[in-house]
Image (cartoon, rainbow, N blue to C red; front, side):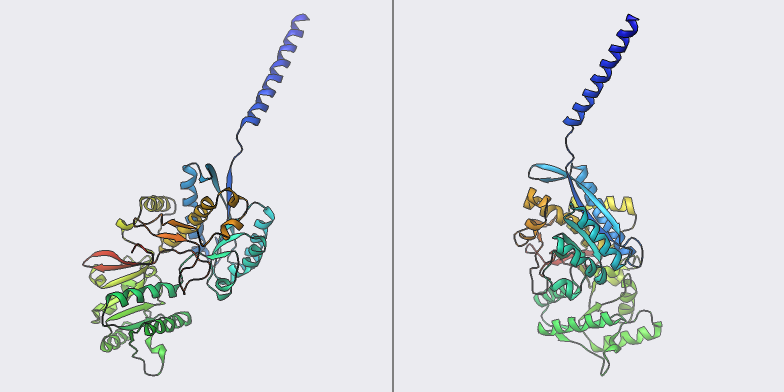
Length: 408
């Protein structure tokens, strides 16, 4: 009896000690420090491709920071937690996700969404709650309004403005022919580019007499029709051709028609035309200038190369949009770190400091400052100042000859 009593007392003491020990462990365990960032993206529906790139870019950047212990803010490190939601390319669903983030009460930064309609749907919801969001919509309503939204990519007109600046500085006698893709949006873009070229005092070559649609470079037309079109271009004798509004991944086809048709002058195109275009032949690339964010390997930082390797390991396929969308989460984290711990519980301090927030571009070797405020007459008032690069191809080599930052 006495032995049983002793055993019972001993067992009870063990339970008490274990309970106290567990309680101490709970009290001594440090509270996890987390920075939550919402991501609204189309992971289904017609915008699935763009949405996947948005999420994938945020994912590799977050993984990199978290492997370093998180983003450092006022001497403490915060793990980056992405709250990814699929808007299914639907405006009402996107608005519902925005309400979800508002109701959560601890989400102050959002990446996305993509496109005008979806971005316009979430804008009033996030604006009313003071949530900063980096969107990919280009409508006037989004760009002109004073809101918490920032455009997270360069506009097409900004890309071609950089082209005009470069040509004006480096070419004495210029005549430019703008060849356009077969769409209303592309035609509008052509007219804006031509207007910009003429304002710069550069001759615009037009070979259509009455109907501007005659200057549509339709690569889907029959070979005979395209060859006839190129003959008209060559006879007009422009020394620069700008490809404007063409379909993605069509550069090799366009270059082959132009070069085989006898055009030997400079050709300028957006780097997105090269997407999945492994057929770009070196023989066609002499005299080619690509405008966008893509740059030769030697121009890229070790950090960028690390992220690119991670991206390809996880998602296999690269896209020129990745070069743009890597900046979104990176800019949020840099902005929060710049503003300090107050920015962890509200975006107001960051939004109030957009004119002063600048940081060296982490993805390029050359120093160039990136920020949140538009810095040219063509910029939206709230826009990430992502670099615009112009890369020139000559004898199989490529070199960055122009950049939109002060270091170039």
